Amino acid sequence: MDAFIWLVVVVIGLLIYWVRSRSDDETIEDCLPPGSMGLPFIGKSVEFAKKKIEFFREGHAKYGKIFKTRLFGKSIIRVYGSENIRTIIQGENKIVQSAYPASVRKLLGEQAISMSHGEIHKTKKRHLMKFLCPEFFANHTPVMAKLMSDRIGTWSTEPAIDLYKEVKNLFIELAARFLINIDLDDDDIAQLRDQLEIFTNNIFCLPVNIPGLGFNKALKARDIMRKMIGEWVTKSKNNNSSNELSSVLQSLLKESGEDADDLTLIDTIIDLLFSSAQTVSSAGCSVGYKLATDADVREKVLDNIREQNLLDTESTIFLNGVTKMSYVTGVVKETLRLLPPVGGAYRTALETFELDGYTIPKGWSISFSIRETHHNDSSLSDVDRFNPDRWLNSNSNNDRYSCIPFGAGSRVCPGQAYANMILKLFAIELTRSCTPTIVKDSEFTSWPLPKPKEQVLVRIGRK
Ligand code: HEM
Image (cartoon, rainbow, N blue to C red; front, side):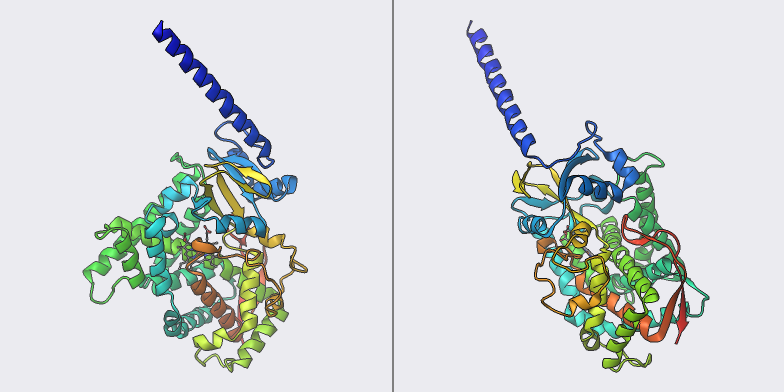
């Protein structure tokens, strides 16, 4: 009898718990953002895989600034707008935490800065930012500018260059030389460029290793890069007097454990190349394209160069001169506003909270869109127009979350200063030594980052 009473109590208890949790779910359900979750588990993954960026565009067109969906087994909130981004960024480690999709985590590895948390994250990031300090730029600006000028000189001997491909070669070479301290030959650069492209194109996918699917392609690309980089590492160890790895890499490895193994070292190099070369190449291609298509922009860049007495291509470019070129700074900022290389970022809700008037349940993923936030910025006039002059007036935009190509808060991009410097130098060197013109044009796509849909051929006419 006792056992029967206990059974009844347990069953009633479970019933009460079920009814309560159901009514909680229903209350939450009523307050969730609009949107469609699709099929159980896979949700809208198939539609997303087909439409990519259009999937998000259509969602925003249908539901507004915020909507819910399910991708790759995760319930996701997609959101844009500076007010919403402010809530997310300021809520880092309180209501949300950085959390990339499983495919990205598995491909970049837990040692990556973007995957780490807490003290390890802070220390790794501090090392990278300390390395990319004003002294780094003071020391390296003339050398980086010279390397660019030499490359552009080689381009000018060709009838036309494939803009995206050549810009990528250049920025991979720069990242390898200045961030990692390895000199690559042209074959290595070309191989790395192609594998990084496959890796990036497939990094957002269902993390299932089936031949032919995206994850499998990205894993294969990573294996090829691991092998290549492993060979350089062995070479540099055998030759340790002349070819030390850069100090930033050594510091990052220290934070991964005193005796970080070779694989951790190799994956740290892949992470640095992925974060730095792909994003900057996308922006570099966009800057090059703008300079090749807009004579007014070129003229104003030339005015800036003239003001600093740097028109003579033999004159050395120092940090000080670059810093004073405010129109060139505007060109880079406007490019990153209209074609942001990182279209959005990912978080997980640490607790249930409110966003844009809706409930975001604990445990759900949040993807905030940098691109849609820039493109729908109501504080700017003529928001779709490329207008570097808008940044010359410091009052033009007071909302620090409305233009955030490098993110903000504790997860802000540590490579921001490096990327800005490289892009400014590229705009300066391309304009002062040549007049680029388009030979074959193409539309741009924004997925997985902005780049020409097809080849863009540019003639680099020497002045
Ligand atoms: C135009 C070029 C670049 C753009 C637009 C860009 C953009 C971004 C954005 C938006 C984030 C923040 C993501 C978030 O909030 O979760 C980020 C993070 C990061 N970026 Fe960049 N980035 C660029 C170049 C670079 C470079 C050159 C490096 C390396 C030198 C770099 C290394 C990183 C790292 C390590 C993180 C993770 C930071 C963290 O989790 O705390 N990026 N980047």
